[in-house]
Length: 123
Image (cartoon, rainbow, N blue to C red; front, side, top):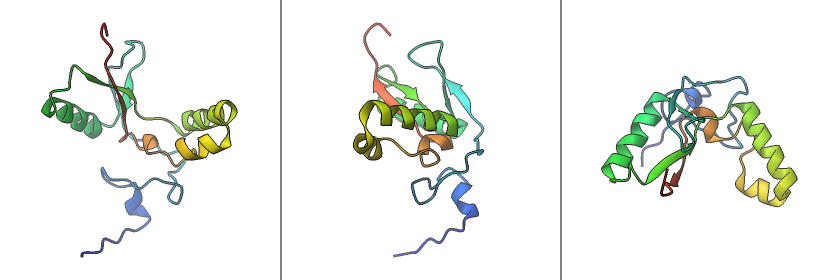
């Protein structure tokens, strides 16, 4: 088995960025994003160009472009902090620690992660 070694600089390079509790992303780091159409035409979904292209290719290959839609993409440190704090308040610590990324530790802060949902009829 081949071993891959990464330096601290490598963590923030390319389309594979390591982000988790042990490898937080800098609070001021912001990727170059573009917007994708969302469920609600007033709210676009920011993603890196590469992530958006890969998402649309995947949906096309799966023949799901009219069934699956992006609902959440890039989040700033401040947005992730807001989500985390709201979850603590509304759902408690046990739920939040299990299901919500700590600010700086969310893949969404890279612009490479996207949440999707099944499109409702009429959208």
